[in-house]
Length: 353
Image (cartoon, rainbow, N blue to C red; front, side, top):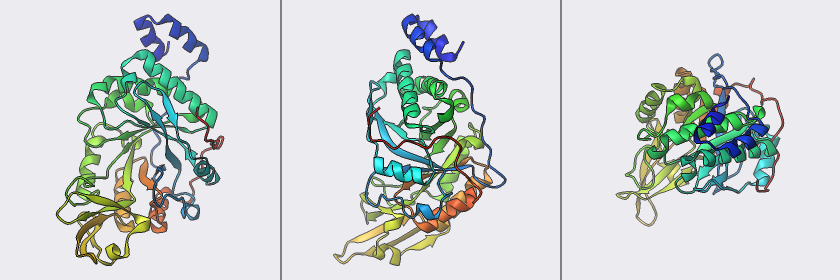
């Protein structure tokens, strides 16, 4: 008897049991994939609409991205699903032979997690979505983490894993560094392909100026997750951006790597301790600015950290901000011998599930 069946019997929901048994949820837990001889197993490229949101020059670095994770679906509190698939981007990703694992995020508190039938209904719907679009899996972006749903989230991860088809077993959870104990790692880890550690936004709009992901800060967050999760189940988050603050304020604007203003670049120096570009300058109107942003050199250092800890891979926030040199650093760690996984390509579609 499978785990979801046991839970249904425990609450006496015989009608739901009969319907689910007929569908035959898949069994088994995927084994972790270790790093390959000093290489990373994967790189997950996140996608979201916005300024500078193009895939170029990704075609020049065909192995820099192995998993394409677009923000295409939103779960409402009750578990209903809203789709906002970009068909043109889906076609572009398919032409690059990337495995597609769409992000599913939340609109409000996930009250559906609190009931067995609610969790199973959402798991079943997401499984059907993966099957119909030939996705390689699902990325759960349930943030901010809610401690109140700790055990319910773990149960949902189990249900979703059991329902995903064999060809779409990739199951990722975006991990908030300061979670406050919201995750049951012991229960979730066997059913997840990887946790993607969101090791960025140490400083952002709303905070005082500072590094986006200082080396010491990243190492500390990574050490914490590695104390409870195998390295082969962790992807280290990489920022392909930075921020510029008005000096003396906490308001910042995003600086994509492929759109660094000339005034910023002209005053930027590499901070070897924090491993980021930083500097200050005065604009033509007399306004003083402070900025921090990632660079290929800093990204190379973080990728080296991922390799040294034998992590599964890296997660990039986000595609659309990339430059050739930044992608080149990732491709070096993946290796030119990487190939897309066998199986069907994703079916680009703008239709709702």
